[in-house]
Image (cartoon, rainbow, N blue to C red):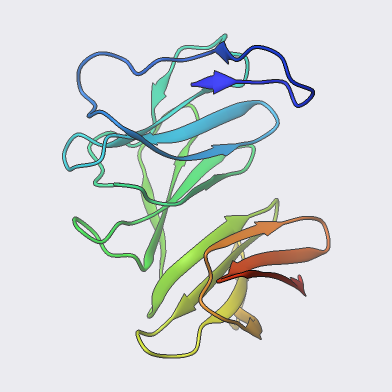
Length: 182
């Protein structure tokens, strides 16, 4: 794992893949204010998610060892790493969660349609999902579910990625970036 200052400078290696137990290759990456997590390995049972501190000062933790993650999408808040199941071992309509510093993963929810992209903030999940051949929709749901379930924020084109700020959910789709209010 390399880190480079925004204003430039030489890259600094903060972590290398531990020997044994995990396959080669790196996939999705997520950060919060103190930690980072990334997908390593690309084939079951050798994949996993590793987490550590942003400055490399803590030992790496296997958050989800043996998961068939491939190049799954991941996100994190200050407490948990979240990831989407992949097509080969699981399916792309499940979201899982595990503590950043280790602990058992749990399945959080199962979407009826294929999740194309997702993000989390302090209070909610945001995701785009579509039934094959159907219209994608952008949804939100409180991390602690309330009566009524997910809220539909907007219909959308096929989503490539989602990011959030305090007021909006941003979505990439083909050659455009659009936003919807939270």
